[in-house]
Amino acid sequence: MNSIESEQAVLAVLLMNGELITSCKLHRDEFSAATLSAIFDAMRQCEKNGTLIDIITVAESLERSNTLDAVGGMKFLTDICENYAGAFQNFTVYESNVRKCARSRKAKQIALNLQMRIDIDQDDQAVSCAIRDLMALDVEQKNFDWHIRDAVREGIKQVEMAMNAGGMTGITSGLKELDDCIGGFHESDLIVIAARPAMGKTAFLLSAAHSANVPCGIISSEQSSEQMALRLISIGGSVHSQNVRSATLSEGEWTRFGVAAQNLASRQIWINDQPAIDISALVRQARIWKHNNKIQALYVDYIQKIRGQNQKSPRWEQITDIVQQLKNLARELRIPIIALAQVKRDVDSRADKLPRMGDISDASEIEKEADLIMTLYRDVQESPGVAQILIEKNRHGDVGNINCQYVGKYFQFKDREGYRFS
Image (cartoon, rainbow, N blue to C red; front, side):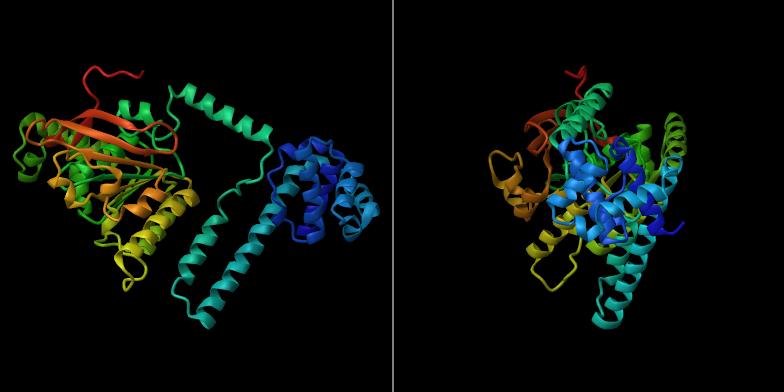
């Protein structure tokens, strides 16, 4: 059965069994003919209005939009119902075929656009755009047009999920107290963690990635993959990092090192350690990881180390482009992106050295695009084992400060002793 026949069969079944519209996952642009898209639109409009779908109500909806005659009138609606009177049993097959044919059409169009952009426009970004568009074909289309009752239903589902997960609606940060405040790292969010050097930014990032226990990717422009691996082993095995570097581990440490290394090797973690990676390469890598490895989070070390697409533009313009692309990437892949950022040196000259959101280098665009912004501070002289996390921006809840333990020799961030979920 070709695409048109499958599309007509789907519409016929829906006209005769209107209640199926609620479980139908098709979208108007998956129909190959404008007339069939118009009929499907009319059905969706009936659904939105709470009207039972049948030939009469769909015809009335088409009449109100002045498209009934264009689709062939009542006769066409009646004809397809007669032609596909027995199609109900194979509805899911027809629905799947419509989606498959639509996917093939879109893939062909992407290929044609790629050829045109390379041959005619000589566009440097053509390949990256084609990869993005092809990967998008593998992602089930998301509906952006909601009736309030459907939005309420989806909202209640999220509350139920949070209740079943003990308040967590995202990926854990590794700190119960922080998760209690922010609900974990949420999909489609850009999370920025900023601090001055030597505050433990990378340790925090890796500690969070290790605790997440989900398939994830790590972009490391600062350290090599083997350095990152050794840090993760220290975190997972509570093995002194200095002893690891010098290979002077005690017998107990060697045992913990071996167990931690074995456990880490079995984890679904991917690392890209390209120095000064540019944003296009980062986006391309993340898409590949999402497509091939189904990553659920991306950790980036760090924003100011990423190169912009146009190296000749001012740095602030490059940072603007980088942050916008990171946010768009989080939405496209439906994963949280947790990215580190540097804080300006000026904060060191203040009496109050706690870094604030405005102290982040190139803060303006980061403040605008990020969903969650946190800064880290440790008074290495007075309280070397204590880290302060300042939640400066939180689109999902309150801001505020929390304290946690920092075990520098293991690169570990831990909850305060005795902390429990509130």
